[in-house]
Amino acid sequence: MSSRKKFLYQASALTAGTVLASSFSNDVFAIFKNRIAPSDQINIGVIGINGMGWSNLKAILKVPGINLVALCDVDKNVLDKRMKELASMNIDASKVKTFADHRQLLDMKDVDAVIIGTPDHWHCMQMVEACQAGKDVYVEKPVGNSIEECRIMIAAQKKYNKVVQAGQWQRSQQHFKEAVDFIASGKLGNIRTVKVWCYIAWKKPLPYVADSPAPAGVDYDRWLGPATKRPFNTNRFHFTFRWFWDYAGGLMTDWGVHLLDYALLGMNATAPNSISAMGGNFGDPSSPQETPDTQCALYQFDKFNLVWDHAIGIQNGLFGKEHGIAFIGDNGTLELDRGGWEVMEEAGSEKKVSVERKKVMDNGLDKHMENFVSVIRSRKMEDLKCPIESASHIAILSQMGNIAYRSGNKLNWDKAKGRFTDEAINKKYLAAPYHNGYKLPKV
Image (cartoon, rainbow, N blue to C red; front, side, top):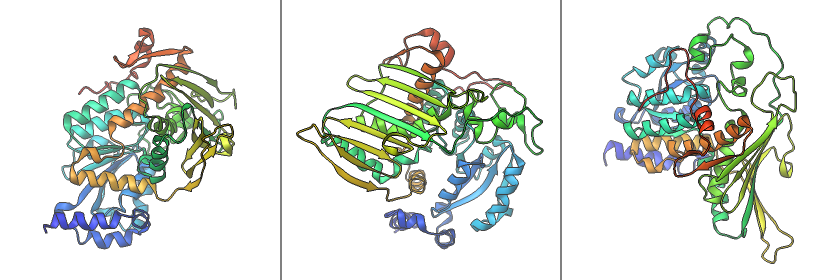
């Protein structure tokens, strides 16, 4: 047996249960790393390490044969903090290069794959440049900050034939798959309505904060990148950037790509016929945030309606859960969330069905990273749990809800052309404007 085949056999044995594999410490994995041939090692760099980029790094380092060789962040304070934390992860910081400019990281010949954990408005440009540089890519969700960016990202993956996995890790969780399989069985009967909700109490409407100089160590111009030039404001910076249209799309795209994704998978649906939306900053009308703290979007498909409903600062959503997806059928309702799934019977149905709650049984992020690494090694793109095509499709659906809200119009979607029937809406909203000398990537 060749060294590579021997490694793949050992790796598959390690990850077969995933729960067990994901519970191993880095010390345990270090033992396996020492036994892996240099040709089977994968060197990674991470761009954007303040939030999910760092969580993604910790997850991928649990996979045998992964070496961290570079970190990049425009905030030196974050970079210094993460470099100090490497010791607790059994990583020699002296062997990890650091950058403020992601292009320097991409120039490293020994980087095989990159994780992109930057704000949404950087995802498209960095993913395209990474593919052009010959790197495989794990890019955080939502993959694009506009419909046009999503299309460009698909084109880049196809042209450069690189592995591109999106950070929608729910696609790697077993209980989500089981719920979709149950829906496909037809036992729920005819499903006319799917309700998706996200009520997040721990995210609060933003208070007013005055503009200020950027903190020492922050390359604010590089953080802005293609976004509109504005004075520094902490509300628009780490984490809460997602409440401003320049950089992201609020909860509609933040959580929408996770939850709406499974709504479509469950219904085996593609694009809606029409989209309408309403909402506003009802929780705190004085808040400076631009994306609505309360929003409802209605997607009309051929045979069912899909309803999105979100609220910031409220916890009690449908069925007393802060988030979930409800497939409401003639015989019963299947409720699915990150904690599990269940089926509640429809009392008036002769074929009523019920299923006791099935609880989550694995770590989705760890499994998602294991899948990413396995495809880097096998080059079997069809094995990816969330390829860029799938991630872009649901990011576009989420963008539709925001565009309907921002325009105040009910919009019709031309499935054949992949655009709205209203050309004025297409001109204004399909592509995000690029500023400061940056241009929308061309592939």
